[in-house]
Length: 120
View 1 (cartoon, rainbow, N blue to C red):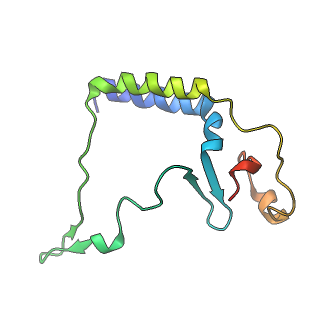
View 2 (tube, rainbow, N blue to C red):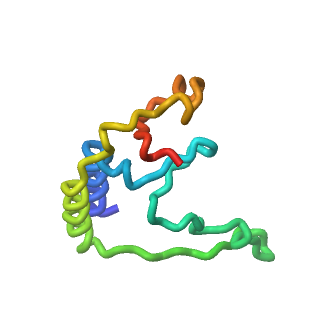
């Protein structure tokens, strides 16, 4: 990786580590699966098992996704991410999770922030 890409990844991870909590209301959490999903994103996976196959020589085949951004746009992505984070206030402070929503066993194991508004 180039220095530009490495610097971008480090800056993006630091930004999310510091302020990613503000994005929690944009996601739902499914108790039955443990999956977080963005509220406006399609549920369709990027690759389905039926798209995977094997060539006559035994090598695995699957559709390749080679969409890549140019390094010149990475700084712009960070600026846009900063704008999104600056607009967010994070999860509402009211609305604690109730015993009817999750089991005691789940609560005992939960180590992450889970605002009630994120529960499906």
